[in-house]
Length: 233
Image (cartoon, rainbow, N blue to C red; front, side, top):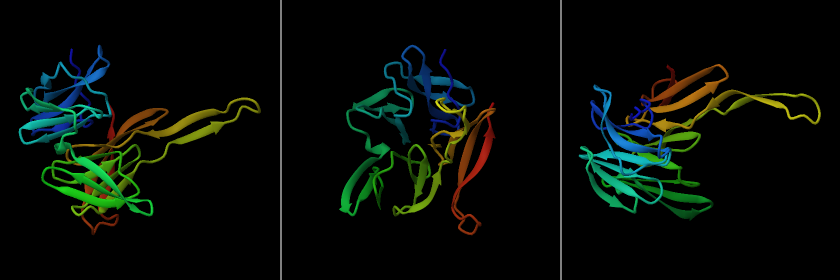
């Protein structure tokens, strides 16, 4: 049986009815890409020939095609119906091509290029990954941070994940102390509309956190990500 994905995580909207997602293959111990019908809660198709590693794959839905990069050495272009149109050994430009050029004093000019638009900004180095949402906004993100950029490449707002909180109990000399994790957070995951999700774990509770971007400069906290908690099932 093909497992259904966790809604809100690693999903890419095609329209209000269909999304691109990943199904776990227990035999291959990796994921397979496919398209899911939201109303029917079934897979319309799954690629049986290629597998992907969780966390490494980049996806973009552009026009009538789905572009995928496995994070290492293979790119794929699918029709929305599931037909494999093209394979490549280079990252598709539809997913964003990133270049960095040193400009001195430990700074780099970072350029993120898409077929119809290019972002450029200066920083100490590129983010781990970039994503363009369905509204054309650009985000950079890594293990502990997500950044939203303006059209001219300036940082509009930054979300930094809370740090893990632990407690230490000593059992005396020559004995390893007992470490208890009180709060632990996952890496930020950016949804197709720009919302950010991450998991939070405490000793007695697991929950999904969600941040939505509020662009009104007149609110007290200014433009940026605003948090809410989604109860986990």
